[in-house]
Length: 369
Image (cartoon, one colour):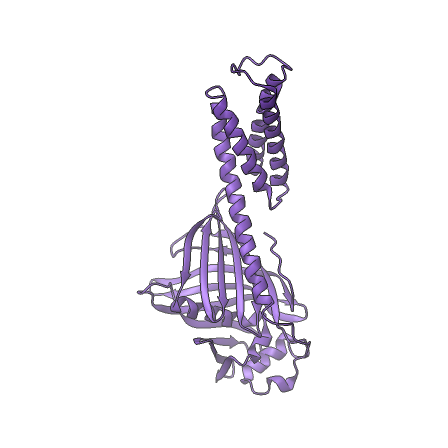
């Protein structure tokens, strides 16, 4: 589809060269019956060049390509109106190019917003001095949690203050949906001052996609989903969403083991292989239970979460399950996971997630998509 669009822009830009040829009497152009002055011919040529520049920047994924697209379309449409009706057919490709340019603009604005929010999370305070996690630091934790921290390799490693998690995923948006949608995602998390930003790009098909952002900051959760990066589909805040977002942050502790030592989290041992964590932060609270195998590996997180943010939204069990592990920067973490809602009608597994990379104690954000 990208190359089909590229051919359209190339042909459309080339056709504008006809106005330049006629304006400077370089050849007889019978298809364009109205007179074209040399100054108008320069505008036709300028438009051709703008379309070519737009095509090159679009194909190279230059983040400001939309500027050239919108400018080229604006000048082109003025020339088309002046040359109406002979050049009227050019309006259709102009509409297509304008639409694609607006999507690029929406993507640019969305990306800029995510980067600004990520920076605000990472720069909430000066990066603390590096300290190592010792066995004395974990003495007060439940036995299965201590065993997990030792098994993960976190003990003896630097305390994690922040992190970036690069993910690829498959998602289903509603129960009963048969087709999995492919997605790529990135998350920035802060531990000293609890917060995270998660952004995802989901491909609905070869043409359409949507982008989403989940945020937990200042003790409040937010969810934003934009269709084609332009149109709000979901823009939610509220107590139920905040509690669920906090529980998600809590469950993702398994990627950032240092979070187990947070003063905002209290622990209760359930048995030799399970412990319940309760997090309280800025008036918001949430809890969940971590399950570990006899070797000390985490394999499941369970929480009663609100499914939705509406007044009628009820709580259901939400389960993170582990399928594989990988070591990043010396820390053994779950690398393949699924998320499942336990509903009355049956289990709904809506997310299959794979961790591609984790960077710890980062100081500046970037977005690969």
